[in-house]
Length: 263
Figure 1 (tube, rainbow, N blue to C red):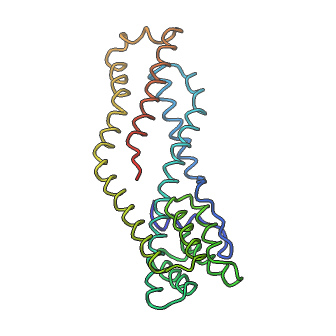
Figure 2 (cartoon, rainbow, N blue to C red):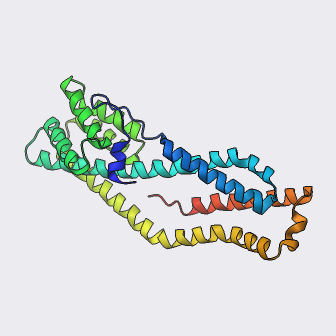
């Protein structure tokens, strides 16, 4: 997902941005892709595991599973990118504060820089614009920031909003707090990127190992069909292949969770 894609999906007005970043909504094209994947996977399962077109009745189940996986993947991508853009916004705020701007003016300056970096329609730009407009109506900045943090579902943004609220109440040094928080966010992001790089080879091995059982089964069906014929067309074979399919699915989920490393 590109940075421009992050902003292009938002159809709300600039005056009131209420996007819930924790819940990803598929576009029509993405839904069609999910359906195509589900049909292809179900057809493969019906042929390899049951050798019966009636195996296509599993298509709705597979479709729901595909949608769940795709939604989780796209939500993670969106929230990861949102955290990066928010970090850039906080760096702009910190720079403006060091230059002598007030907090409200620093936020406006950050909005202008984010617009240059990501475009006017980017979600992060519109969020900052919404916060700045709320300030004009005498709504506290920390209130709109907390609302954005809750909707973002990003741990770093939630933590920052809590620290910001505490600092606002206690009259603490905002420059130091924002600078330290931004540094920790950047350090965490760099650590996550390093982990992803180190785990990239293992993830590739995982993908290869995931398809090997299916390839072996397909090879046996094409070269030694008689050897597997006893597993099709009878209840014993159906139950046995269903058990194999369930074990294979469980292995896929387990391997994915093992490599889902978080900081």
